[in-house]
Image 1 (cartoon, rainbow, N blue to C red):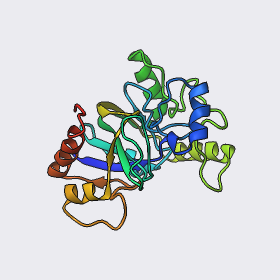
Image 2 (tube, helix red, strand yellow):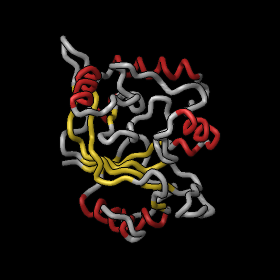
Image 3 (tube, rainbow, N blue to C red):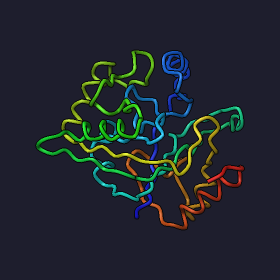
Image 4 (tube, rainbow, N blue to C red):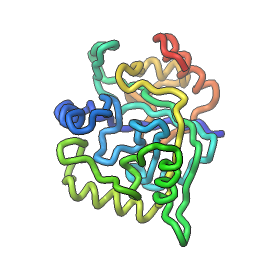
Length: 228
């Protein structure tokens, strides 16, 4: 079993985009992924991970039983429970366990397999699955990267899925998308037992954690009253 940690951009990073999104998609929470095809699909009880964001760098590296921790990119976030800290920090919003991995075959696309899996579970297929009647979020309801347009973002996602069909289905070990616990630079330094140059040791390319580091992260969020 591997324990992986990485970052993503939450939709609250752009407050106007978040306000637009919750008007159109009521299930949206402030610390859900900010993409127009959110991945992971945190709005589902079994979040899906596709290659849309990180190409094959994550979905082709995990195995069933692996654990993935999602931290936000660093910013001075504010929420009802944890007010502004006055400097950039990150938040742990989800810990996922890999349950199923779908690979494409000559007869059926991996996303079609995933779509059928969700349907059999009675769950609407997530927005980051290209099978079924899944459409990107409307313009203004997702964060578009610098030097990108709405359409170029869609085209990029489609191209990535064409090059890497793999679709990963996960379950929740822990989640908090409304009042997630903050992690400061010094928190990470204590957990990892080393000095950091940046506010967070994580980025979009995952890093592996050992069991002691994982337990230290759990202890940190438990110290804020979180249940894991």
